[in-house]
Picture 1 (cartoon, rainbow, N blue to C red):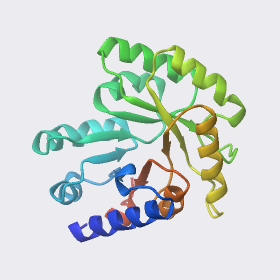
Picture 2: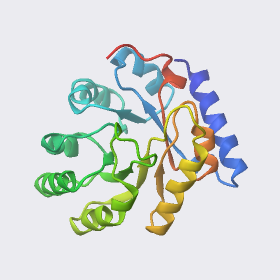
Picture 3: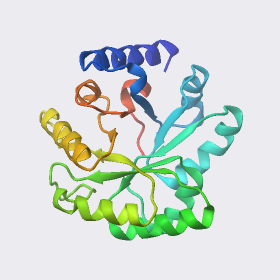
Length: 220
């Protein structure tokens, strides 16, 4: 990764935003650093990137304390599935949690937030393509889950999705944007390396970009 790579992605974000009459600054670039070691992450930090995404609580706990000490101002997002028994660790470590998808996790996060007196932003993950192998709540269950999360005091920032692979993602992004509007939510965590420009034209506020920044991911 070079600063030129980061700059090129930022330029693409700005151009996609302009198509939708938005500003590039309206879109948060989450650099997905999962499975990458600290030495691969530092060039991005040195180039000024401060928002990163991790999939696993334990991996982030190993890597990020030292990096955060060396590079102040880092914002860390949990973008992978979260087990309820890891909620307390996640609340302490992360600034945003992107995969809130079931009532049991809402309850665990609420308890952890009260105990830690810390309230990371939460995105409700929607199984936008109704795929059994993926996490996320069913579209039909979204209103009840949102009501539960709000009643529990979770700071719900928006919705998140992973559209089905190998098909046009645009209809799924458009559907998530409609669901967010209907729920009175502004945040939309959608779009990755292959489709982030489409996501931005359809309203994404957070894009999760890994391989376009870091290259092919090493084996987990």
